[in-house]
Length: 494
Ligand SMILES: [Zn+2]
Image (cartoon, rainbow, N blue to C red; front, side, top):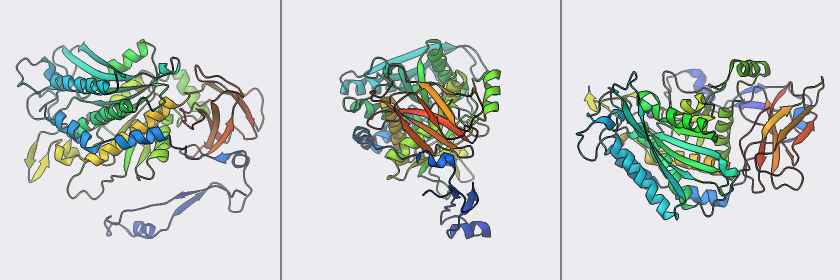
């Protein structure tokens, strides 16, 4: 019944796109689509298409949907306004002794800590709140030994084994102006990165408030780190801690510059999507691992990329009706820029970066000033709080889905002991999950054409092994665990 799969690349250009641009684009705007066929027209259905159904959107969990409805644009606005109010949140200001009261990075840390405390009070002490202060030695952008503080709250999972799995959302609360060493002149950092901190705090607020209704078996961590602008120091410290303590940290969502910059006259900004950057070859891969990734063609299947796909999957379930979707970028970060997810990637953890569609570089890392009639500076007036709220919903949906899921299958293996056209896969149940026909967890064996960006086909199985009449040479395989309610864990690849 199935026809050969055709990939359609539809160009939906905004009406406001300059008409003078070029004839080709105008032609496409009239509804013409470019089609790239993987098979000749009218050809037979291939084995990999017959053996399964196409991947479906997961059913929504009413409790998660209720939590997302709690996300408040007004609350996000208050958070960003408050953070801007600290004047200059340079990490270096922690060493200043005579800052005006209520300004500087330490005052901001105190306030964030107090927000977590207030949330925890509301949920009967459901959050464990940490304030981790350490001294960073002299470095390129650190002129003297400087104390740096990470503040985070832990919403512990309700299953003692599954609670070892952690999903972390973070933003950086330090800010900067044109000079990274300047601790006095205004550095509002409304977008970079009060917006990301607001996402972290809002996720903490709505998920802790709904904690008794959400069946979160895994643990969610809500972080606000400092030192980002001095060299990712806060996140590097936290990631190193997670590794040396042997934490089972399965995904990091780093929100940095998610304010939906609103510059009057910018017709190319889009408010219905957020970019999600992910690494293809893990930063922490050894030479031998990199060699194997190359040999098997797995450069698009790093754990970080599976996190990016999980973000897209959660969006399809919870945000497609709100018309807000992630735009996955298969690249660790933007050109010339870095971010806190990199610290986690370097320590071997999967992590992605979320950033608004189009950044305005006049409103980042700039002294607040007007030059030739142009306003510079990372000011409140350029932040779209409704946009930040959508990004917060996307984060909360992803975190809650992953924490509610059965976890990630382990040791996924493709059996390659002889030449054959079929594929046998084996794996282990996630830690603490029962395996076999009576278990409540089932698995989706997923595959996609090697040129496809996301999983296309799924085959459901209760056991932890399967043989399929699909050639492992022609597709990429992955396996994920799904519970009875449809919560999907991260995909593990062989
Ligand atoms: Zn930033």
